[in-house]
Image 1 (cartoon, rainbow, N blue to C red):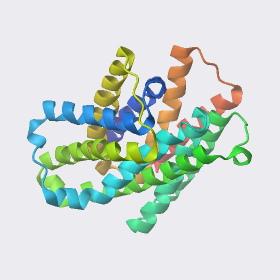
Image 2 (cartoon, one colour; image 1 turned 90 degrees about the horizontal axis):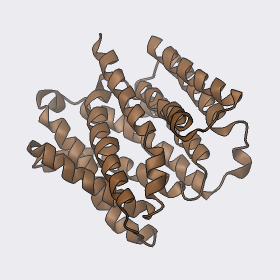
Image 3 (cartoon, rainbow, N blue to C red; image 1 turned 30 degrees about the vertical axis):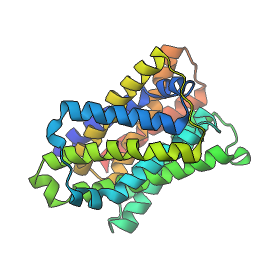
Length: 290
């Protein structure tokens, strides 16, 4: 198996883990305000990471400075998406967040001067079209575009920038010659998101926390699996493929989350939604053949 296929397998595993977290996040937001939730989630994730990977400390100042643009896009994306969920529906959030599958090849062309092959552009359009059918079921998107939708669109743009910046940063020779640098970058992302969420919680919301053991369990799951493990996998393996292909793989999160909803929550899908899921999978195959 080629290096690229191995990397894309682990990126698909990352998308699978992300696909299991939607219900957990919705449960958490019943007991905690959105940005404070990010502070707790990423704060716990940082502590767990240091506990398991103590060699990731200390973090050199040079790494922080070179990673600062990536860190800002990472944090902003989470803030826009989490707050946006308070004002829009889950299905619209999934669709609009998925706009990064369109933004990413455009930004890759502009920022990295690497134009993705035609197959990637076709696959991106197939995946986004399939995502529309899967999440909207024929509902109107533009006519009911609200503030939450706008914030979620900003999230999609931020995540596209993040994917391209992560590719640029981890492709540097220093990451190849010093494997521990990748782990330091993972911790830096978790720490930055956790620390920055604290002041922004007071700036953007009235912080709210209603303690419950369910919230504790959900936060632990999200911190360990959806934050620590997924960030390690993405930071380690995305450099072995392209940002545009990674975006197409990550959008499979929507398909996976829908499958979990059908299996564990008893939700049903219309024929149009199933066609959308099939179109997304077809888009992934087209991307792999490109």
